[in-house]
Image 1: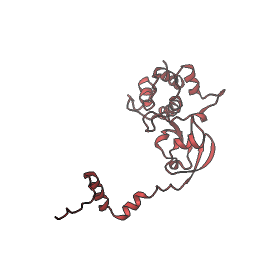
Image 2: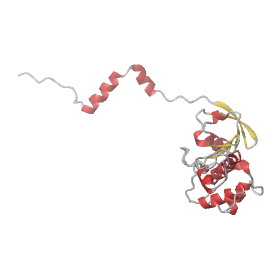
Image 3: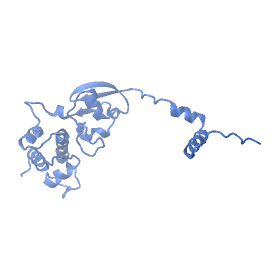
Length: 209
């Protein structure tokens, strides 16, 4: 009697597909897939932050926000959404407000950066900081540094006559509530202290209540 032929180990459908896919890849692709990721070469970035010159060796992928917080210990600038949607990370770069979480530090070679720490100090507050205190323009305080930095730059935009979507007369930009709310719409306050924030900005702007 003839013995049945011996068969190899059974192969599942999933295993067959996986082995077929691996066989279809060139050897170079397999080697690259197994190689560890290469570290980025450090880049030298020179910044003037709150009036002090700094030279930093940074991974080119480092955001301005992370450079300020992790390398310069300026933790007043907050990391909120990290997607440019909440405004908690707002700082001033050459006098203009930006979301520092969306900007790479290497993009700001030679720039002047002002954070909330650079606007004022205890006993010598910036007028906007003092107004926020008087009008109770904060509750938990997490968004407050970004709110204050943004409002300082926003008032300069108003003084320069830069219009917004809420500007009724392009020849005369005034700090109405509609203007202030539109211009500050990129800074979110999850405690909903918006009326107090607008009151503080209005005081500094010199606009009547």
